[in-house]
Image (tube, rainbow, N blue to C red; front, side, top):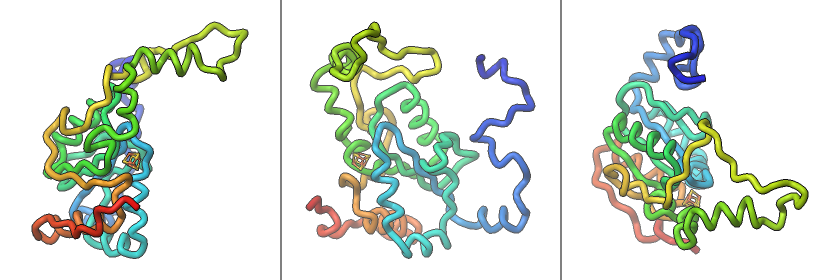
Amino acid sequence: MTLDSVPKEVIFSHDMPAKALDPELRKAREAKVQIATISLCGCWGCNLSLLDTDEALVDLLDKVHITRSSFTDIKRIPGQIAVGLIEGGVANDENIETLEHFREHCDILIATGACAIWGGVPSMRNMHGLEACLREAYVDSPTRPVQSAPVVPHHPDIPKLTKKVYPVHEVVQIDYSIPGCPPDGRTMFKVIDDLLSGRGFSMPPDFNRFD
Ligand code: SF4
C-alpha cells in the first residue's frame, strides 16, 4: 500500500490527536515555547537524560510544551516550532528524511550527544563497511539457525541503510551541540533554559565530564 492509496478517513499517528483539544488546554499549550525531540540512530540515552532533570523538568514544562518526543516516536512536527533536539547519528534514509523535516520546522536545531555530533557508537560500523556488518549479523552470525538459509532483511517498508553512519551536521545545518554520552541532564536543561531566557549559551566545565 502506498500513501496515495490510503483511504482519506485514515488518521496517521502524526495527525493525532484526532479530536479537537479542549480550547483552554490548546490556548495554554500555544502560549508556551514549543520544543520537540527525536531519536535517529541512537539508544535513547540522551532523551532519557533530559528526564533526569527530575523536578527541574516540572519547572521547564511551565515554560515549554513538548510538541513531539521520542517517547511517542511521532516524527512529524505540526507547523513551525522554536527548538528541536536531535539524538543519534544518521544511519538510514528515514533518518535523513526525519532530520531534514526537523531542520525545516525548527528555528533552532541542537545535536545532543556523541552519536548526533560525530556518529558515536553506531558509526563503529564505518570501520568495517556496511556489507561486512550485514554479513556478520545475518550470514556468519553464530546465533543463526544452521538449518535455515541466511537472509538479510529487505523490504520496501524497511528503511534503507546508508553506506556510512553520518553525524547530523553532515546532513543539515546544526545550531548548537551538547556533548556527552549521554549529556548530563543538567546541561540539557541549562541549554534550553539559556535559550528560552535569551541568555548566551555557556556550559560550565564541570558539566562536560564523562566519569
Ligand atoms: S550519545 Fe550515548 S546516550 Fe546518546 S544516543 Fe548515543 S550512545 Fe546513546
